[in-house]
Length: 342
Image (cartoon, rainbow, N blue to C red; front, side):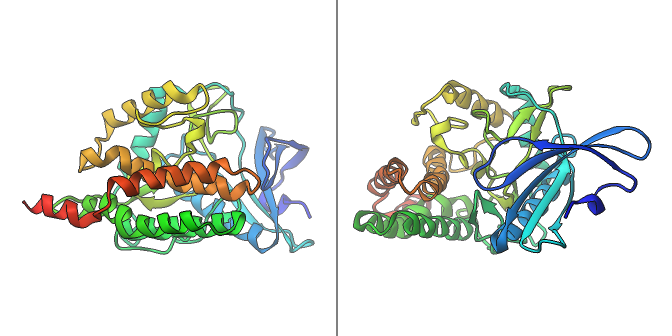
């Protein structure tokens, strides 16, 4: 059953031990001795069933793409596959890094994220928004179908998360009404102006689950070099600002001045956001920035609601934000277009 075939030839397995915690996959550290006598550690995660197979495949494709733009800050992917002896078990392997639980240096972290965005800008393999295969946030599959516009891609992604949230918590008349207004009015109003009226954005590579919050975050300092190490991505090609609030607001990673958080990340978030925008300016229309980010964060509000069916607060957070945006933009894109053309 073991993965020796995926490791370098002549490797000696010294130990296998638990590494980290996850509600969705099993994770271990594999310590080895290579044929030249040097020590080398690998990280492996695994999952079961058809969904587990797609999760491991998606992780490999996602991390491989991210690694191509940040090889010094992303663990090098090695392989993914299925155990021959147990065809229902699947795995992903990459280099292992010892990391601390310290918060990453603001300037280093933001410089890495901005560089990934800048270097990948306009390099989507088909020139569109999306990703080449299905990826997963936790166990929830994303609809990554290629789209010509960012509005189209995000609307589809948000719809997918709403479907999963409804499956988890059941139907709700108020949520259904808000959902209709969101897709008819709010999404066009906040996202269409990015690519109309002479304005334009280009798809860049988005990690999509990146936040510098607590100990389960997807970026930590290397224990030796102190360089931020970014991992556990769910990549797609999208609007760069989609990274900034593609994060749980409860954990306070990136946040706007309007938003609150429940932990020490509040001031950290403002600092990270400010530092990032020193490197990449806010997209036009600038005045829409705060509400755009609220819209992007909503997908994670809904994800958390879907993942915790016995916890009603996440649905309430999403619905409160939906109501705020629906009330603010009752006339949708048409009202903006009229002002834009005046």
